[in-house]
Image 1 (cartoon, helix red, strand yellow):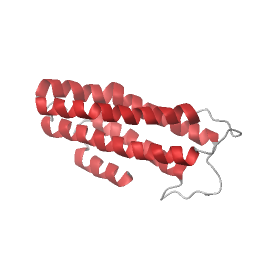
Image 2 (cartoon, rainbow, N blue to C red; image 1 turned 90 degrees about the vertical axis):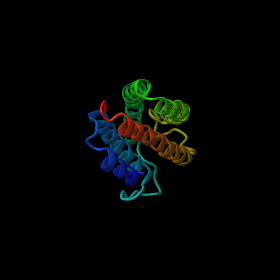
Image 3 (cartoon, one colour; image 1 turned 135 degrees about the vertical axis):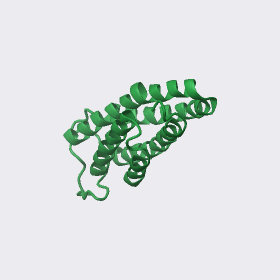
Image 4 (cartoon, one colour; image 1 turned 60 degrees about the vertical axis):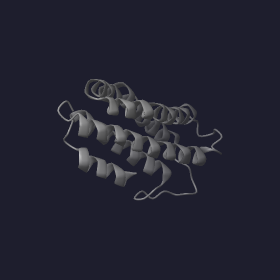
Length: 158
């Protein structure tokens, strides 16, 4: 996922302040996810779970990222698509439900773990984190399709 982010930043970086800021927020989310999951380049002691404070901080970044997407970037993309072309609007209409599905998965993770106590039942944490990772990977792909449309079809406004 970090490799795909780097490609997106190289391809679309500098085209729009909103896109640049959003991709930087994505980087922060991904770094925190990798640390939480113990994925390279971050080593983790696989015998113990992350602390509740680390998870709470991750969940806050996750919710901030989702909010920025839905209330800032997606609105901008949708308005540009409405103004500048049917093809773009059709893509956006096809992707919104898929993006919303990933939002539901992410918010469910947040609901379950943002305020989890150290003494709580953590039996499903690894599988829930893995499911969240897959949802985020799918979401980033959908978002990149929207960014591509905004970049290629609406650069004069972006």
